Image: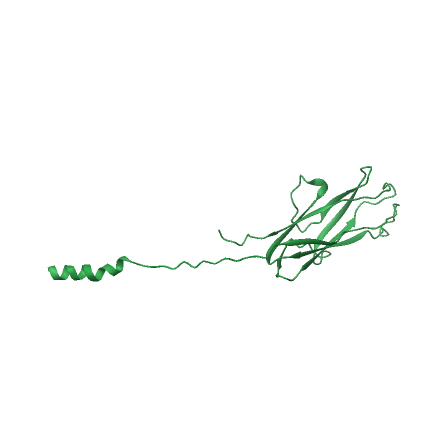
Length: 168
């Protein structure tokens, strides 16, 4: 009986050890860059009453270029309403334009590769391949009572990596 017990102790000791390998990986993303290529400019518009269907074409296209790599989210907001959160929606962003006398006009903007169809709130970037976004806008409330003057407004854009698919 003594020989059998020592055999079990000698040969069974290898089962008290085990090894595991943990693989370590890291993914690096290119820095995001958002550049204004062209500002949105409606040009000169004559303030008058227009017949329905005969309104002036008050459409503009600005242009942005985004570079980076991976899935990103584009957010935007009207700079005159900084208390509202950044906008991520398929709905147009309503922007307030003001002149030096604080008179206001409203404009509606969509942003995307083809903003006449839809807003691009998220998309995938390929490194070293710029992604073009157009800032498509239209003035909403022009009448003969629209005060003369130069109206300005701003849209603040923010681009960030989409980490919703990352598991922590």
